[in-house]
Image 1 (tube, one colour):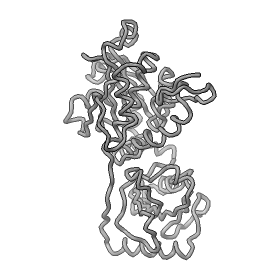
Image 2 (cartoon, one colour):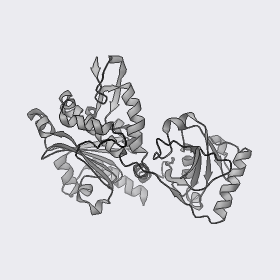
Image 3 (cartoon, one colour):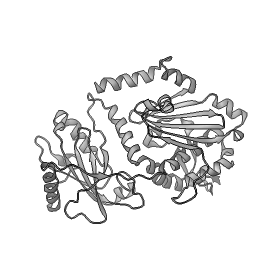
Image 4 (cartoon, one colour):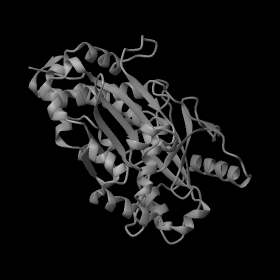
Amino acid sequence: MRTCIYCREDKAENEFTLEHVLPQFIGGASAPDFLKTRDVCRSCNSNLGLFVDAGFEKDFLVHNYLKLAAHAFYDPRKPSGLPFMCMGISELQPPEMTDNEVCELWAGPLGERVYWIRTKDERLFWYSGGNPRTAKSKHSRAYFMFSENSQKDTTLTWFSFRDCFDGKKVRKVICGTVDGANPLDIGFYSPDELDKLRIKFFLDKAKSGYREKGRAAMYLHCDLRFLAKTAIGVAYCLLGSKSLTTQYSKELMKALWYRQGSELPKVNFGRSMEDNNDNLLTSMLSCDNAVTLTILPNPIGLGINFNISGTLNWVIQCALTEDISVEDKEKIGNGFVIILFKNLKRSIMLDYSDFLDYKLGNLQHDELNIIYNEMNKNNN
């Protein structure tokens, strides 16, 4: 029998599975091995993946900043698709849309539009793209429209259309005609009668100069739950099983399993959505178009700074001083920084002092220089 670090229940050995403390949607597969553990049960791995990891990933701002990072590393010499970005729920009501459906607008890398008519989920109202499980199990329809800029790089548009909604049961239809290629070859369908009605509806709106209107929903505490989960995992990987029995860990557990309307847990947590030029902490503990995790001793114990692309920033305490042994302090030292480039499938780990020297321009880091030189070359 073993204890799961997230639900704290004792379970049989065969009920445990590999957990990436830093989830794969931010590049956790390439994170250092010490941030992976097998002390998480299958149930938590699955359910927290859907309701905590995805709840954070599908947040409107988080989702789109992660997509922008993917765009930054696009190499036109190696044609591929780029992810579409969710622009929220459109006010448009295409023909025969039911009360249980929404029309969600997505924007492509060159301004292409997709109207995805999908089932709505009141529980997961803030998820860009709705419930991930529903998208894989229930059929839906999406209508793709080219932009004028599509002519600048038809291959990019084509591959982006191909990759959009991969793995989901989406009937993809193009609003228009294509010369020289067949959309059926990349997963599209010939329009049926309902599709033809909707295609006319969307094209008529576009031709009339309709100004798009919509809304994006947000859930305030989705980041609290995700950061609490991260803090529990990091503390366990660094400090061992004793981190699960502290009073502060009990508060982190309350945050992880928080439900709307409950009393907020007593955890040290904060968020900032400011541009890095306006916030010193965000500016110093971040890398452009990357997820940056800083694990740092502070006056009250051990803290985490979590940053996305130098703009979205969170801090959370993962352990208090009285719960950290002398041996732990020696192992952690002055702290360290992990930089994740999901689209490159790479991670870089630096001592905290070396990272500060890099940010201040006092230290050159060959691997980071190569990454950013290549990024700048691709974007020029």
